[in-house]
Length: 61
Image 1 (cartoon, rainbow, N blue to C red):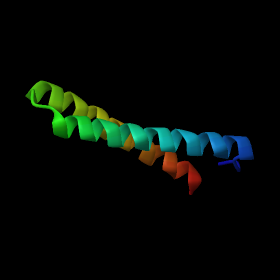
Image 2 (image 1 turned 90 degrees about the vertical axis):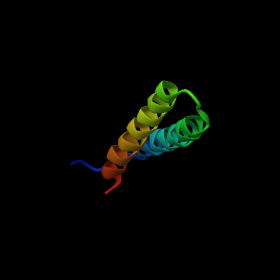
Image 3 (image 1 turned 90 degrees about the horizontal axis):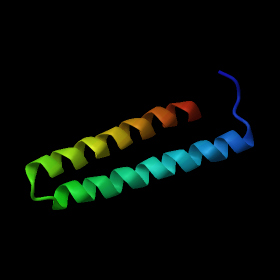
């Protein structure tokens, strides 16, 4: 893989941070949800955000 430019690196860091924030918020919403379907929806969305963050982190290695 080619080296990342400074702009690409900044954009990647921004995306990783955004997905981490999404994961944290969605996980909190899932913990607070009472309805099982809503809880499941937030849990899945949180896991998706975490998975995407982890995939993005591979570009830094």
